[in-house]
Amino acid sequence: MNLDWKRLLNLEETQILGLDIGSSAVRIVQLRKDDAGYVVTAAGIAGIANGTETNREQKEINTVRAISECLQSTGVQTRLAVCGVCGPEVAVRYFKFPLLPLEEVQGAVLLEAAQVCPFNVDDSAVDYQLMADGKDSVSGVLVAATNKLIERKRQLAKEASLDCVLMDVDGLALLNCFSEYEKTEDDQATAILNIGSSYTTLAIKSANALPFIRDIAYAGGTIVKEIAAEKGVSMEAVKKTLLGSENPAGPEMKLGDSLEKACQKLIVDVTETLRYYTAQEKSAIVEKIFVCGFAPVKGFIELLDSRLPARTVLWNPFDKTPCDGDQNCRDILKKNGPAMVVAAGLAMRSI
Image (tube, rainbow, N blue to C red; front, side, top):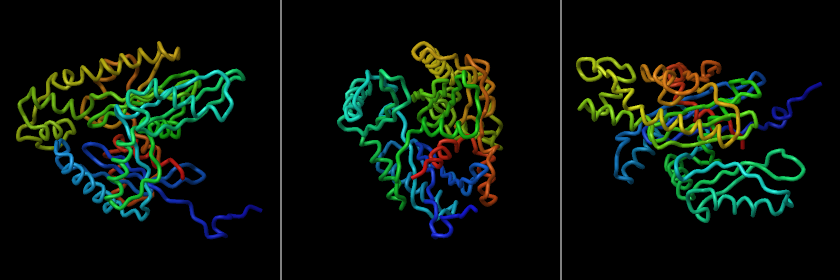
C-alpha cells in the first residue's frame, strides 16, 4: 500500500516561480510537476517602459513596476522566486584537476576561477558541481557571477515584494528546460540560441554532458536599432513590423534586406563560437540549433537557417506542456512561448 505522506502530514511542496528579468521585459512562469511531467500553472509577461532608458534609477523603477504588473496579471500567491543572470559578469567553465582530497577541491576551484573569469573573483560568488570522472582526476563545472550583478537582481525582486531564494544562470536554465522536453542522441551536440534584448545566450548540450555557455553582446535590441537607423524610423515602428503587428507605422514598412544586414554580426559571432566549441571541446559538430527569445520575428528563423552552419528551428517547449492556467496564460504561451523559455527553466529548479 502506498501512502501519500505529504498529504497525511499536511505538507505541501514549496511553490516557487521562475522570474526572468530582462532589459526590455519581465517574464514569469510557475510550474507544477506531476507523474507525467511539468504543467504550467501561471505565466505572465510585461514590457519595461522605456527599456532603453539610460537613467539607471529610473530604469530600475520601471523594471520593478513591470515585475509587479506581471505578478498581478498572473495572480500567483507565492513570493519565492528563482532569478537568472547572464552577460560579461557571469562565467561558466569546465575544470579538471589531478586527484585531490575533497577538502582541497574548493580552494582549487577558486584558484581556477581567478584565472579564467574576466572579472574579479574576490568580489564574486563562485559555486561548482563535480562530475563523475576517472580515478586519477577531479573534474566539474564552476559558475561565477559578480556580487554586484547578483545583488542588483535580488534587489529588483525584493522591491516587487518577492524573495529571490535561488540565483541561476540563464544558459543553465535553458539547458535544464531543453533536457526536460527534447531528447537527443547520446553522440549528438545540440545548441540552444536564446536571443534576448541585450544579450544572446548560446548554450550547447554535448555528448559528454558538460555545458558550454557563451553570452554574446549582440541581440534583439541591437538588431532593431540597426534597422531603425537604416530606415530612418523609430525603434518601436521596427518592432511592430518585425512582430507582424497591424499598421505598424502607417503604410506597411518594407524591410528588404535590412533584417539580414542587421543580423550579419550575430550570424558571424554564433558561427565563430560554434567553431571554437568544436575545436576546444573536441566534441561532435553541432547539428541542430533551437532558437528562442527573439525568435518569432517574421523571416528570422529562415534567415538563420540559411546562414548558420547547422539546421536552425524555432523552439517553443510550451507546445508540449499542458497548461492549467487561465485563458490569458494560454494566450501568452501561444504568442510568446519562445520568449518564456528561460523563465520556465528557472521555474524547474527546486528548493
